[in-house]
Length: 310
Image 1: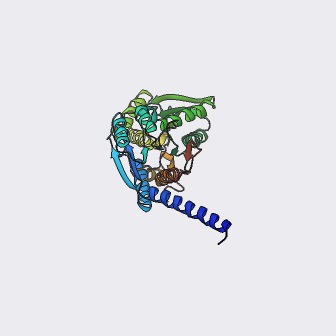
Image 2 (image 1 turned 60 degrees about the horizontal axis):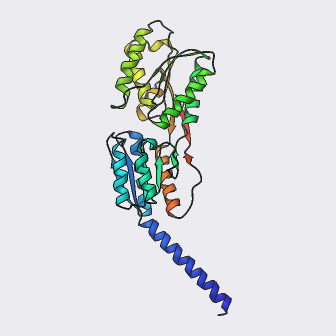
Image 3 (image 1 turned 60 degrees about the vertical axis):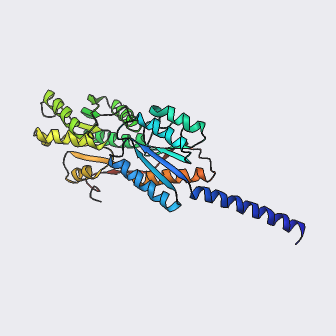
């Protein structure tokens, strides 16, 4: 064997050894998934899909649910830092857990968002495009009511992915001189949002009893839309043509949309796709890649009576 062949062989052997070490490290990776929202169906789908990919890769995944306690996420992140996990995934507003993210950064542990807000301390945030979803449903409403009428909005500014939707919908409605925002409602979401949304919609209906006084209800997610629907039906005002839209296209929303009643449209997020894409992002970084995108968007789909049963 000549010198050049020996040199090339040595280089190949070193590269192969390095690759084996990297692959072994990725295979044995320990990853923590931390969320206060595991009771929510969408979060469950994210986590299940993430776990599915992780299992294929041989990762050890620790799913931590703080059961609605956002502040507790900080201590859980710090616990995982102390345990020296290889990566952390959060499903929570990153601005509310800044101290935990800073602890992870100090320990050189990458943190990923799974339908969280964008933040410089996150490697990337994998989510649906809230701006696009809100634009799609708000323009649907504007078109359906002919660009005029009073609209009730259900919003939730405390969670960035949902807050974005309200901002975009407000901008769309603001571009129609004859559309008026009758009320912006932030429901209590401790029970998911349906019950309090119904109660608040009942109050709005009582304050505006004239037929046609409410043209539409735009909701930033499905639970308020369902609550508003219940209130409208309970008040016997389902035949006034009040248009309702939501976002998420959860099974209950799809069922109502398929009936062809007031609840006309929602947007289906690919929850499983978000979970799988988040796992892919983790794998890429553990494999040595640098992700340049601060946000990775997973495609969505408008759901109406035409495709609600699919």
